Amino acid sequence: MSISSHPIDPLDWSHQVGLTFRDWSLLLRALTHRSYCNEHPEVTEDNERLEFLGDAVLDFIVGEWVYHHYPELREGELTRLRSALVRNEQLASFARQIDLGAALRLGAGEAASGARQRTSLLGSAFEALIGALYLDAGLETASRFVRPFLEKTVAALEWTHLLDPKSRLQEWAQAQRLGTPRYVTIAAHGPEHAPLFEVEVYIGDRAYGRGAGPNKQIAALKAAQDALQKIEMGEEPQL
Image 1 (cartoon, rainbow, N blue to C red):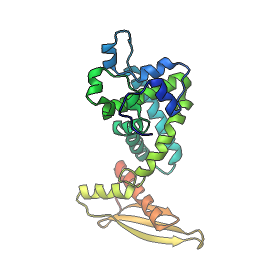
Image 2 (image 1 turned 30 degrees about the horizontal axis):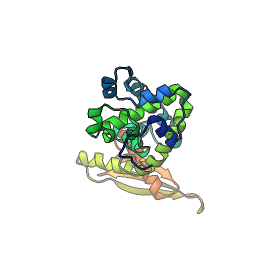
Image 3 (image 1 turned 90 degrees about the vertical axis):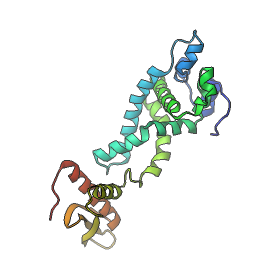
Image 4 (image 1 turned 180 degrees about the vertical axis):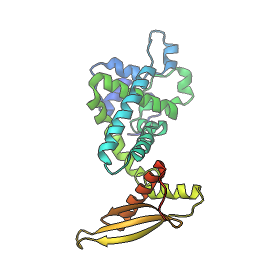
């Protein structure tokens, strides 16, 4: 969806993005900034309470999604991925994809200051929208709305330092002034059509972790994951 330079009626906007509400007042409240209430005394509720609720709902939706889509990730890695997906900057990006800023009800001063594209305001409004969807139609409807944003975004995160355990292990080793991790294939067995490789990761002369997989790359990732978990648990590396 293209970004509009002009305000859009909230109901028109909802039809453009395919959202329907049984209680349209929830949508209007989700799109109402407190500056609008200050200038329109007849409007008594802004979106801040819905933002609070939406924050909690998003944490659950995203947490459940990454749990089911990444069975190989450990708890710490799942937490990092969820945090990346629900941080304000990312939520503001989701909001821009649906031109949410154009539908916001803002006070004149806020609107004139460019608030419709302000990251902090957009992220908060997206949370409020999720809170409204949850109250109006339940968790599954809110989840169906959120999932496409996650699917489009997570591919760009998968092999950054956020998730790539090899990158994270290297950053840790360098921060500790221990040198660069080395990955050593210690075994390869199984039939040719289904081999299994075992890899150990060394930092200096110490083995920090071991992993196995159908190719050396995956085995090395598993070794880095194992090393990171042991580091987090305070286990001593082997000589």
